[in-house]
Length: 107
Image 1: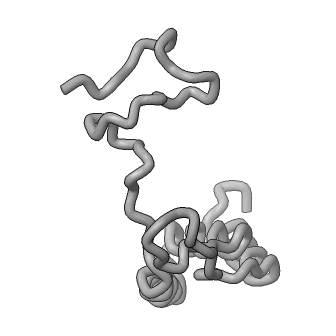
Image 2 (image 1 turned 180 degrees about the vertical axis):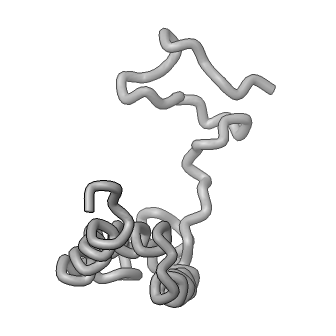
């Protein structure tokens, strides 16, 4: 199976327009559920509390943007979005500040 396309065969946005399931980035991707995000937040928070740099970075990124997930409707027309991670800039800043203060080579 071919897992790449020449540049001339890609759409303007750089993605394949093929709906063929041979391509890993198609419209049938599994979206993480609300419960999966809650579990990830719990795990990342625990790891961040132990000083894990990547956990702090990922928490910061999640809080900086927030995350919405489909509500579980069976078709995209019926789907509504539910907040999985609430955008919270102060929590994001706390994580990024910890990284700058404790893990930056410029400290």
